Amino acid sequence: MSGRKIVVALGGNAILSKDASAAAQQQALLDTARYLVEFIKQGDHLIIAHGNGPQVGNLLLQQAAGSTEANPAMPLDTAVAMTQGSIGYWMQNALSQVLAENGMNVDVATVVTQVEVAPDDPAFTNPSKPIGPFYSKDEVTKLRAEHPDQTFVEDAGRGYRRVVPSPKPIGVNESNVVNKLVDADIIPVAVGGGGVPVVRDGNRFVGREAVIDKDFASEKLAELVGADLLIILTAVDNIYVNFNKPDQKQLTNVTVKELKDYIKQDQFAKGSMLPKVEAAIKFVEQRPDAKAVVTSLQNVGQFLSEGSGTIITAAPVPTK
Ligand SMILES: Nc1ncnc2c1ncn2[C@@H]1O[C@H](COP(=O)(O)OP(=O)(O)O)[C@@H](O)[C@H]1O
Ligand SMILES: NC(=O)OP(=O)(O)O
Image (tube, rainbow, N blue to C red; front, side, top):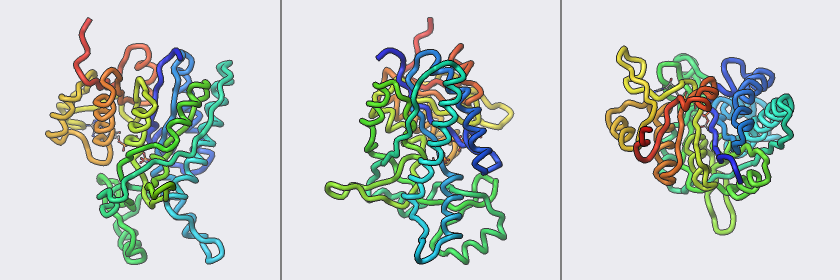
């Protein structure tokens, strides 16, 4: 197979900004597809992963609002699978349109993906993954009284959000399916929303109520399919040290060792940039000849033409 095998993890802004309507999310994905098509045009094989935090939280609220004894709300693992379906549909639809506009006849297929987690992962008793909408202090006081089984935390000064367990991925059940699709020149959309969390029980997998971080799930999939590149697309063009301070410094080419030193200095916010940095480190440690990249969708053109963005490698890249 010629061309690079690339796992692209799409951040929140690639799907949802303020307007949670289907039409607005479909429009955002159409814009996203116009950036992604540049990889396909130059012969790369893409595997597309995406988040679902806002969508799965909103879905749980809709489920709860309409549930009756005869028509009960679905559990969180099933809700994650439902968001893989809805976002996968929007992605297939958007990318197919953009591929056709570019005169390319390439199929796109969403894979409902089960991601294995450890039953004793400590995350099950320490919810940390924010989902759904933001609430004010008054709203959250009321919600805590109404739902003593749910956990709400303050999210980076932006308000309060419900948090759910977020165990680490240890396997991707459908990684062979993803590879077969890539070999057949079909673009897979996989590990959506971090994948459906499942634990092994003899010959079967059992769903668990959790939301896996899509950056970690994308990393695990990239490892398992032998990707050449893991690209994590978010709202910033680069990773920074001293982020948002007057002396902030853009990272362009950075090694695992340098990033580990910056982690010790607390340079990356937990729950936002830190998981991306950790996923990038894990990927290049597993595959030392491969690279990881953290950049924005808007910078994809410059990444392709000039290699701009933050490029993470196991060892320093020799200068020419
Ligand atoms: N050191 C840092 N360098 C760059 N961005 C950072 C840093 N620390 C925190 N951030 C923030 O992390 C955000 C990315 O995390 P997040 O919004 O959770 O990602 P996602 O795009 O997956 O939803 C960036 O947009 C930026 O605001
Ligand atoms: N599952 C997940 O990581 O979703 P977000 O990226 O939307 O938080």
